[in-house]
Image (cartoon, rainbow, N blue to C red; front, side, top):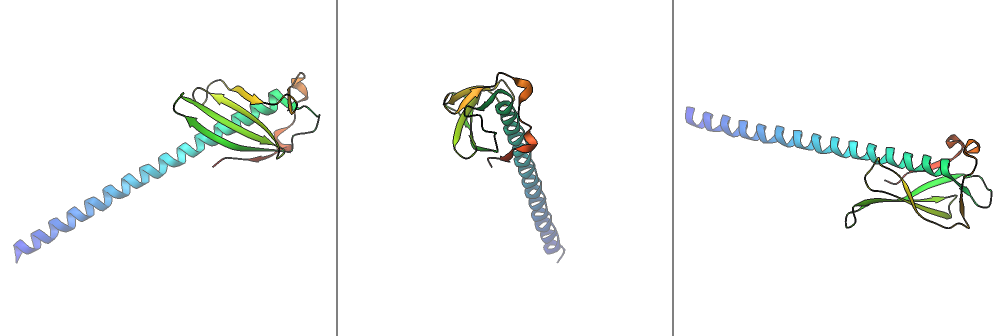
Length: 134
């Protein structure tokens, strides 16, 4: 009888240990995912700020919306590619070697965007609808 109780206790202990370890691993994974999403969101904000500070629409229109349509790491060449769509139709792309490093403009049409000459006259971000990449 005591042997059976000891076996049962060991089995319950092992099951409890596995459940606890599974919970710890799951919580750690979920926390890592949350931190990664926060970092990606901060980086998208940085690129949006860079866009508003350095570029304006060539036709003189105000920027009403900025949607981040691509946010990915290109592992073959080891850099990040971020593409935005402004006012639903104008695309401009940026690259970074590593997140948080220097932002470089990689592709846009000079018929759609021009470099801002008067940086004091930049648009306020609070007037722009922002759509983030998930």
